[in-house]
Image (cartoon, rainbow, N blue to C red; front, top):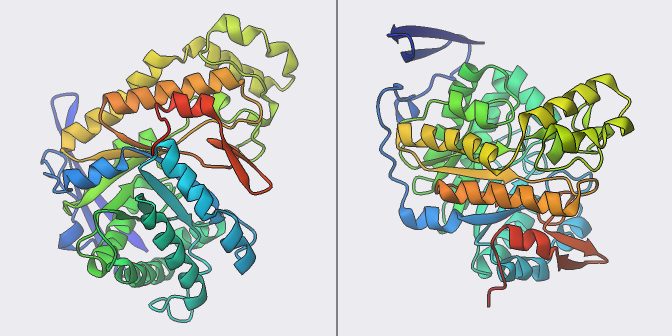
Length: 396
């Protein structure tokens, strides 16, 4: 069990210094010196090379391939995303991909220090294919909710996961650190932000021991959104890029999504930008009281380019405060029920704000429900409205 002692000193009304001591009671989750949490008033002084940040300017997520699938068979892994897809990604103008990876098929419960060879072979072949097309790649450990629940409730599982990450990082350490990035975990679902600081610190230490030269990508607790980023205190390791996800406003970006909570399934044709007048046109189609109230608030909040810029500016201010590099490697809109022009407008406003503040981005996703392409019978066709919204074009 992890015990946290937090000392808070207030200077005036609005400033505070937070000193955190993380004490391991029955496990060794004590954050080592190499990943100690930096006091809030001290700069981190990042040493991430500019050349690496330049490779993470505009990317796309590869979902439902090595993660988020009920099938990790040979047939699925070899056919879901092909060399033609990777070539198209490069042609559209993306400079990197985020490869989401479910750890379970790689994870050896008997001995986490040994990776499962068969699945590892497919992963290696995929990385070879991506790199051969001139793209950088984020290796994103993207566990199922079940895996994360076990991780969050069992300190032994954290130890095993750290051992697993050390083995994987060591395996990947021979690859070019200028083009291969290691992301600790996707959306950890840890409710306690202080606990997550210690957990992530331990995982960073394991990754760093296995891959001394590679840049690590770290995120906040829960769903790694903007509030979690603002809570996060950077680590002393200077070769880390910090990251957040952004899907606000949820009533628009997840309209019709059956997996996203009780109210989004009621929403269809939700407009963007929002105002009370535009929202009133669809209120009569929604009969759930909570869903109606949330939609009314969405209209009153007047989400538009200025509001998105304001929110992204908060992330940029956090990064400037700590002198650390920042990316946003998930943002997007579920396309099945959103008006196409409005979806493109939201994506354009997001991309514009991120680029204004020098934040590299990775859109969610390539060919899934949030996709930049439509894929049928193995053939992918770009959604040029989205491609244009992303400011991309054909690359020779």
